[in-house]
Image (cartoon, rainbow, N blue to C red; front, top):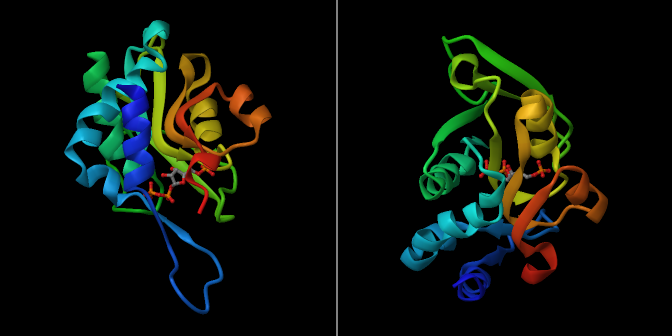
Length: 180
Ligand SMILES: O=P(O)(O)OC[C@H]1O[C@H](OP(=O)(O)OP(=O)(O)O)[C@H](O)[C@@H]1O
C-alpha cells in the first residue's frame, strides 16, 4: 500500500511557476487532498512511521497540519492538539505555551503555541506536518514539548540528513522524489 501511495503522491503533486517577477517554482500540494485514495491512505501511512513508539497525542502546526494531523491521530487512536502560529488569527483566550520557531525556509521568525491544558507531562507527542524544509517547525515544537517529543512525521522531508536525524524526522518521500 505504501509504495502505491508514494506513486500517487508523486502523481498528484505539481510545481507551479507563478510567473515574473518570481524566479522560483511553488509547490502545489492541493492534489493530495483532492484524491480520495491519498486522503484515505495518508493517515495510516504516516502513523505507521511512529506507531511502535506509541504516541499518545498528535500535535501539528497550522495551517496544513490542521488538515493532516487529525488523519494521523485517528489512525493511531489518539487525540489531536493544534499548534497555532502567533499573529495568524485573533488571540487565543486560553493559557498557552509558546515557543519561538527559528527562521523558516522563507526567513520569517514565528511563534507556535498550544493550549497548556491539552498536554500532560507524561504525554508522548508525535508532531505531524506535510513538509519539512529546514526543520524549523519541528525544532520549535521539540523545544516546546521537551521530553514529550517523540519525533516528526511528514509527507516530504527535504532537510539535510543531520537535521533529519537530530529531529527524528521520518517521511514518505524525500525532496528529490519531487524534483521538477
Ligand atoms: O521545515 P520548515 O522550514 O519549518 O518548513 C516546513 C513548513 O513549511 C510549510 O508551511 P507553509 O507555511 O508553507 O504552509 P502551510 O501554511 O500550508 O502549512 C509546511 O506546511 C511546514 O509547516
